[in-house]
Length: 93
Image 1 (cartoon, rainbow, N blue to C red):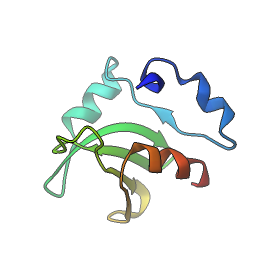
Image 2 (cartoon, rainbow, N blue to C red):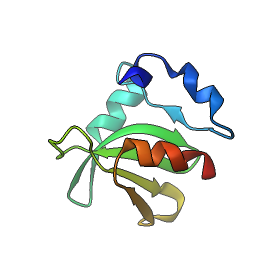
Image 3 (tube, one colour):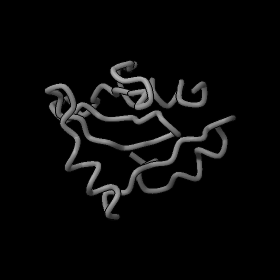
Image 4 (cartoon, one colour):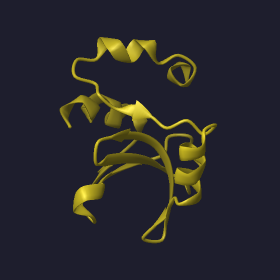
């Protein structure tokens, strides 16, 4: 996906405030290691204050569902059918 190589297109989305978790820094590595939540294999990829977005790590289709948790109000969460649906709604958080 082009977005994984260049996130500059996100600046065209009004009110997009999420930041992406890098798998190359210590925080990203720790997030990945702590990814098991309620028996789900969730891969972290974005945060916005108390909101955290995860890919379904069990998906083999190439279009994994996205789980978004309100970390300040667990276990509240929202499920999106894929990254595109999440991206369309992300600026509404």
